[in-house]
Image (tube, rainbow, N blue to C red; front, side):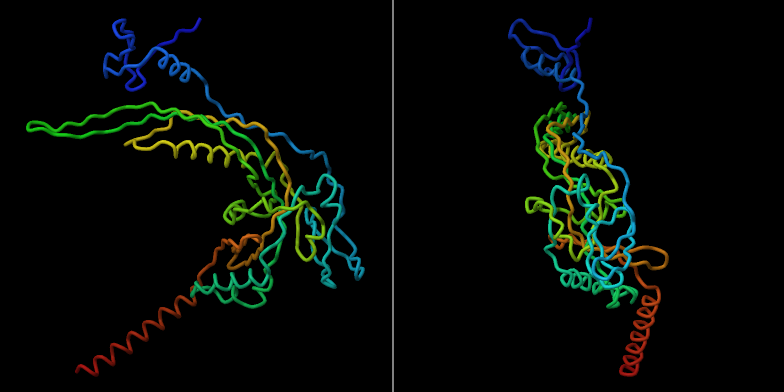
Length: 354
């Protein structure tokens, strides 16, 4: 047998039913509720809200069965690749090569977003980015380094789902007023409940261990509405990898992103309170689906003083992110150059004045 205790939603005080007006009244803050509203409120409190974020998994019943040595069809040279590379160039004749077995069968993507940004446009964006860094080491601006920027089709898992989000908060509103004798402060307490449905489409999660998710998420969004059915011809002239993180691993990051987005959307519907404290929340998913796609990224990695600096650009939109170092030698030269200039100016002023 379970026991239900009715407490005031505003202050948590004891409540009693009044036969006179048919209301349930709090003994402390004198708030009034109908019996039906209080019953509904109590039912909501008793409901245990939990996350339910399970996905239908795509077929991944494959095993590693491929050699890492291929023969170039143009010149006969040997092409050595790692076990996830799906498109590359022959090191002898520079002919584009696609390892068809790595983009077919269970490895065949459902869709691909072709490159819209050209290599020349990516190189110019990188030059403009470097131009804003006067203390940048010269290694980063050498023409050979800029020309090595590479277009890569990166494997992504795209997650679709419907979601139901539930969130509860405790909130307050504070009112101040005064009379001739006293200053008054009144604090009203509220229990806020939100529930709603949301749809998520093409939530991307990088399926490659080679790239840091921080970079691939920074260059979002990709417009997946412009994706096309996969054809190997799109890979010609670019590098491409097959996924080495399966959908089940990627869905953990997808769940984090979906859950946070759903809770943020619920939070944005609550306005006008002095304080707002989350109490409990839950997100439940339905109609889940995971798709496999190749998305375009321009990439340039430069190693300097033992650290790798990455420039990454969305090959569809041109949005980029990058990290560049400063040269201590250039900094010292700039400092001493400015010092010498200031000294010379002060000396001339001294001659003119005295």
